[in-house]
Amino acid sequence: MKEIEILGANRFDTFTKTREGSRAIVVRDGLILLSHEIISGWYLVPGGGFEAGETPEDCCIREVEEETGFIVRPRHQFLTLREYYEEYRYISYYFVCDVTGCGQMHLTEAEMRRGLEPQWIPLQEAVDIFSRHQSYAAESEEKRGSYLREYTALQEYLRI
Image: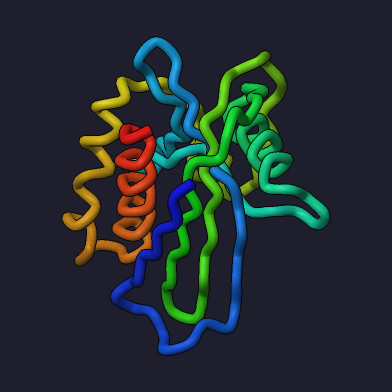
């Protein structure tokens, strides 16, 4: 399993807060499952932060169902990605997952306002979308960083 660090341009000299979460790479018939925010147009690999007592695998399963309505089984973790922005250290555990069934989406109010919905798109199209991460630097460091994270993860996924 690979470990990668991303140092944001706006990072502080030291971090004081850590947020851990899991993300799922789900590919079926050449299509990858992404969470698409219709209002902003953002795409993200499904996932999110740990809840109390969760393992990385449990978080991955819960977050994918909440965001997409699909039930997944993590096959293996292939990447740990550490990002540093402002006073935060973000740790993301990436898993290759299989869809095992359908559940029910449970979106937060913020996700509903952003129009979050699952989308299956060609894997290479997702790579192309995330490869443009630097073009968002002037617009939003959050979007640039999110897209860099997802691009880095997909590049590692394609290597396995």
